[in-house]
Image 1 (cartoon, rainbow, N blue to C red):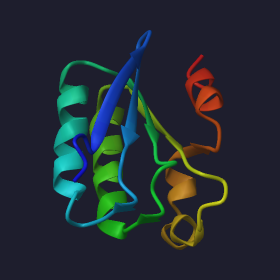
Image 2 (tube, rainbow, N blue to C red):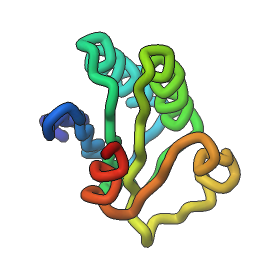
Image 3 (tube, rainbow, N blue to C red):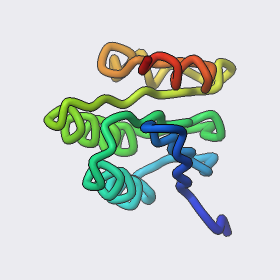
Length: 115
């Protein structure tokens, strides 16, 4: 069992949220949405979600990210996604998520994109 499914690390005014799940699915989506809501509620306006450990991401988990993006956008914030370049990106293309989020294969580039 994973001790921590989601981890937040602060880098200046940016929250880097790492998802420690090989399968980011319906079962974890509500908890992830709540985890992000708590960060946004603290006034954080820049979040990078690191999905590089995820082999599978389902539409419900993507929905949690989109809902969080809507919430943070209201506060003039934004979310960036980092994914493993070897990951099956079909889900991103099918859901057109790459049109909704700025996506990166490098964590540092995602963080720097807020500059």
